[in-house]
Image 1 (cartoon, rainbow, N blue to C red):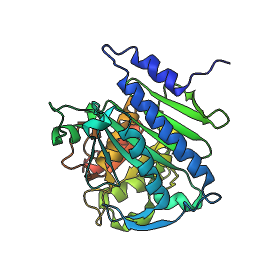
Image 2 (cartoon, rainbow, N blue to C red; image 1 turned 180 degrees about the vertical axis):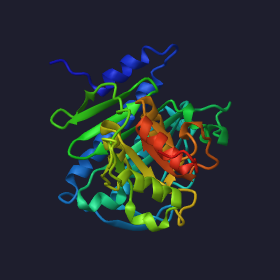
Image 3 (cartoon, helix red, strand yellow; image 1 turned 60 degrees about the vertical axis):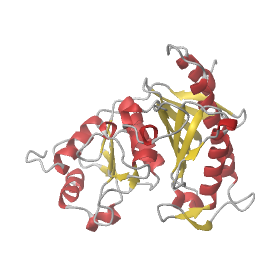
Image 4 (cartoon, rainbow, N blue to C red; image 1 turned 30 degrees about the horizontal axis):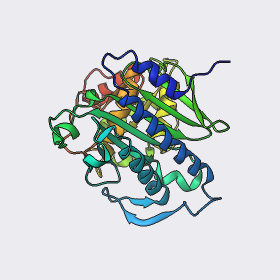
Length: 336
């Protein structure tokens, strides 16, 4: 049976873009190489060198840094900065952007990443992942400015995630469909396994950390109570599924439908997930698959960040489920 590799797919797609230079394909190839290295390390965690546990350091968000966090961040940064395809790299783990020097080869893309989402699950063998986003440099000259780093989310050239679970999957979109590739460890190649992913129009699963219920506002509480309440509607009550790794919860939601929620609360009134590294790339993926992504009252892809570490509430899911959520969260009188 003929199988399509990730590299073949990207090159085929790039040939449909007028004026393509191969630089994007080269960057995606380097992301794939870094993903294979991380996947190998994740699969060996606990039996190889001591890669589990904390480094003793704290990142820019005040979170304790896991050793595998640091390994993933260093791996992606080292490989991507040498690709010749980017002019800057931003990471959840770096306070400031990494700017590429002329002697390293300055490219036309901005690469943004959460190098290892789900740090708290690393030591207990639960699925974790990498989230990335790619923008095209907009400003003139060699310098990188806020015009480049703080672009509206719908200006993304591509976005994707790699999930390291029972298998390693690479899911991405360049705005023309969402495609999933599964790593064949015996060959070391990602092969197309999920062609043109489409999220169901509505699901019957909700995903949220209900341990934070006491910190939510009343509209969020009412929304979750509505989802849990039995009704003549055959989709209700919804079932709860929550892993606690954005990549894993989003991946299940993308394939099965439903809604993922990380709302604002009294401890995080602006939300807790990062716009550039988590919300924006997931928004492009979900909307490219026919779903929606919202803060609860704003479409994520319509937003422009004011800081590379800005946080927002995040609601991802099926078209109809996000519409239901927004009716509750916008103080609308006509809730379902």
